[in-house]
Image (tube, rainbow, N blue to C red; front, side, top):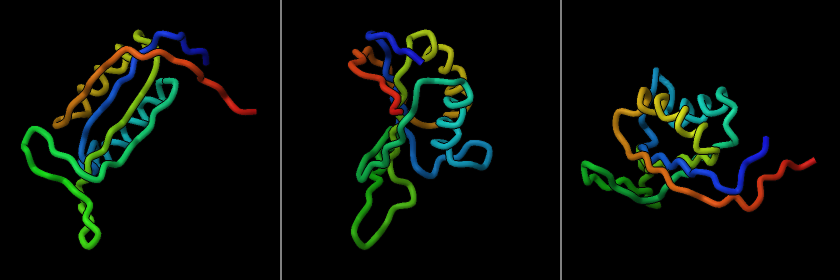
Length: 111
């Protein structure tokens, strides 16, 4: 797959314990992106954060939170990102979704 130099970054902020149809929401989002042949997705687990309810979610040495912040990043063409948004709207009941323009420098597949 080729990505144009001008692309978009979709960033999704959710909680690690969020579910969609009984499965972790972050897995459901990444699986849907793969089904739709998007360029790729990455899930990042945070160590501290808060959202709309202002509850702190943190990972302490002696206490591991069961609801750490999770960020999913997807870079693709504006058209493919726009086509993906209705899927997110269906899946996400609580969280934040942002979109920004990015410049793709390299998108390489190893041999």
